[in-house]
Amino acid sequence: MRGIINMKRLLVGLLTLSTILSAGAEELEWLTDVPAALAKAKAENKIVFMDFTGSDWCGWCMKLKSDVFSQPQFTAFARANFVMVELDYPHSKPQSDALKEANAALATQYDVHGYPTVILLNGAGDQVWKTVGFLRDGLPAYMAEFAKLPGVKQADVASAGSDQPSDPPRRPPVYAPFPQVAPVHYDDLALKGVSIGPAGRMAMINNETLAVGESASIKLKDGHVVVVCKEIHDDSALVTVDGKLVELTMGQH
Image (cartoon, rainbow, N blue to C red):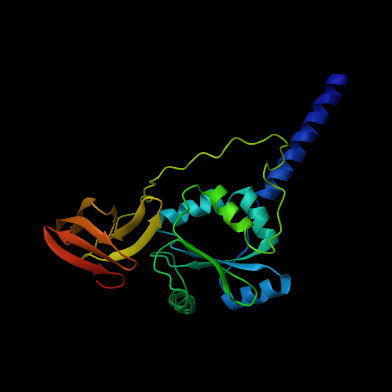
């Protein structure tokens, strides 16, 4: 009998811990309308958190989502302090024309040239924080930065239901390659996007992602060309194509 009672207590404890962890891991609500987010932030005395992302092509954007935005410590802090806004610039994901135009205007307004870019606004719409790329130490680095913001409320979820001290965070790899996507054949070379991470800028040229100094054989029409990346800027890249110097600019083919 005593063994049955102890087992029941163990099961209740496990269910309680599971509930705590699940609550910390709830997904955040993401808006796409900045004016609505500003109104909500002003009413709730919160900060507008704008994530400029390339959700279906930008490797560092995906890493930011999985390693930071999806973590219980961040989600609990964000629910207490932020109104979350996703401003997406995908290559394949469908979007309405109105949303595309609104996001393009916001990228121009806030001088966004690399992805991911995170910008925080107070309730009055003033910028209080901005970073481009993925912070080298991941979640601890972001949380340390957010803790410096004036008026933020701390969320007691550092251990997510555990009283034991956690192990020191492990430093993420300096370079994380972009996830593989289904190949698309192009007639001409095109700069599809620029992503910024701890290793520096990376340019997505057609189906290939290159850092400065890297090369790739890229299929064009019925053949291939050898592309070597020489320089990467906010919205352009300087490459050699079969030894010939060429500048590729975002949005131009």
